[in-house]
Length: 466
Image 1: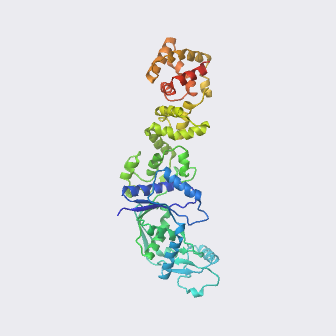
Image 2 (image 1 turned 60 degrees about the vertical axis):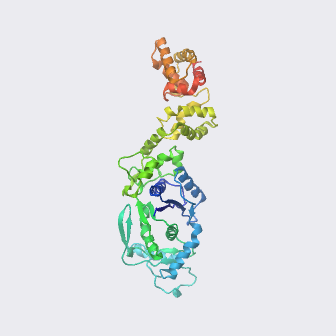
Image 3 (image 1 turned 30 degrees about the vertical axis):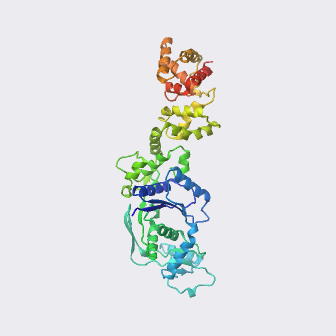
C-alpha cells in the first residue's frame, strides 16, 4: 500500500525552519513512494492558535512548493469525534474518571519532587468507585495504561527504543470541561486519516511512547515512526533566532529561492553520497528514510548562501527579472515599465554570477534602471577628474557612430580610442564605468554598455563629461 503521511503543525506562530524540514521530508517520502501527503492544522489550543499563524503556515508551504493532497484538516472541529473515542474507552473499562483537583495534583507533584521522584500521576483514582467522588468536582477521563512490561518503538531512524510502562502514567484524554487533549486528538486523527508513517522531530519521542499505549487501547494498528534529529546552530547549540530559527517567510524576504531552500533543508540530516546540489526531481527519486542520520544537523548560513548562489546562476533570466522586480520597485518607490524590466533581464547574465540572493541581485541591478542623472558613489566621484571627464567627452562621438551596438564592437571602439590617445585602457574604462554605473564595481563594462543601449549610454556619459 502506498504510504499516507502528514505534516501537522500547531498554529501558534510562524512556520519555522525545523518544521519546514519536517514538512519537506514527509512530502518527499510520499512523492518517492507514490503516496499521499496531508496537511493537518492542530489547533486544539484555542488560546494560542491564531488565524495569522494558519496563514503563515499555509503560505510558507506554498512558497516552498510543498503541495499537499486534498483539503487541509483542522483538528478543533473534530473535537466531538475525539470525545466519542474517549468515552468509548471509558465504557470498555480502558479509561476511567479521575476526580483529583488541580490543587491536589499540584500537592502530589510537590511531594514527589521533595522525595526526588519523577513527577507523574500516581493513579489515585484508577480503581476507585466514582461514588466516592467529592461533590462539585468535574472529572477528567484518563487512559488506564499498562503498569508492567515495556513499550517498544521500532523507529525507522533512531532504531529500537523501549521504555518501562511503569514510567508512563495514565494520561488525560478528556479535560474536565470535556475538551480533548492534544495527545489524544493526534492519535484519533492519525487513525481516521489512515496515516501509515509518522515522520517528525526527535523531540516528539516521549509523546510516541504514550501514543502507542493509546493505539493499543483503541485497538488500531500503530503507524511506523521516524523521528528525525533536530537542527542545531553552527556552534552545536540549540537552534535559535541568531542561528537562523526564523519563519520561512523571512528566508523568502531575504531573497532565497524556494528550490534552493528545499535543497539546503534536504541536506540538513539526509545525505546521498557526496551530492550537495540536488534537484527536486532527483530528491524525489533518491529520498528515503534510510538516508536520514541520527545526529543533529547544523544550520549554516554560509552553506545556504552557497547553495542559493548556485541556483541563482542556473535560473532563467526572465524568472529572475520577475522575482527582483518587486524588490527594486519598493526601493525605487515607483513601478518599472516594460522597457526597464527588459533592460534588467538583459543584464541578468552578468549580474547573477555575483549575487548570493535576490536582494543582492536587485541591489546590483538598480543602476540599470536608476533615473538620470545617475547618483555617483563617493569612490567613483574621485575617478571623475577634469582629465577623466575630457576623456569621456572625446570618447562619446567615437562610440556614437557605431553601426552595431554589441559588446565586441564597443570594446574594439574603446580600445582603439585609448590607443589613439596614447593612454592605457584603464584610463578610459575606470571613469566610463563610474559614469555608467555610479560605482567602481559592476558586470563587464562592455556588457553594461550593450545592456544600457546607445541612447542611455551616451546620455550617462554626457551627464558626467559636462
